[in-house]
Length: 262
Image (cartoon, rainbow, N blue to C red; front, top):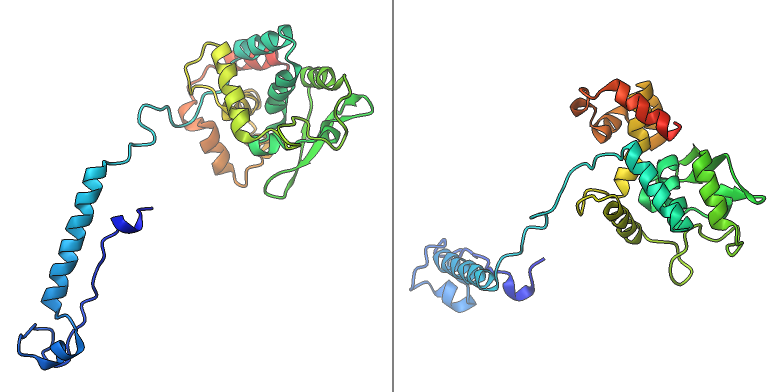
């Protein structure tokens, strides 16, 4: 929003009832009440606008926010990329990031919901739950299944027992949960591990992976819609980019899904 000094100070063109806005110099009504005739007001408005444009040109224009950046949908991960990232995180014993990545694949939650998960939502009695329920940001209750790989990573992450059932599963600073921006930076680091260009991998790339595999394997759009918690099927179609991906090889998609155990 422009500052007050950058805004043009317009003058209201008040029409004199005596001279009808003609700006007659001998009109006593305009001189007596200090009103501006219409031609004079228009000239002042034009001068104020020209001065405002001149100040903006001197300060320079704001750069385009998406210049040189990759925008639009990000492609889902392949089976090789999923297993490479899982292996790398497991070898480095980074169990928190491994649990975060696996939950991002299995839950289908958006980033703002994923970081708000609590320990009791996915873990109870010393082991990970097979099915978890969570209230999304829109107030609707959603349930998702936790796969074998995800369950093992959660149990390894919570095995020291430092977190209470009511604590956030992925805590941040000052007792808060991990925020969405931090989750996005972690996803960018995962993309660097996989050798992707900056911006090629985001949190939506992780969420779109399982949804895309579900559709390629079963063709059930309704199941994918429920998994992503979309209100209408058209949103799911646009999210998956089905119109652009009809030419994909079905056998390759089935092999990819079998390798991920979906």
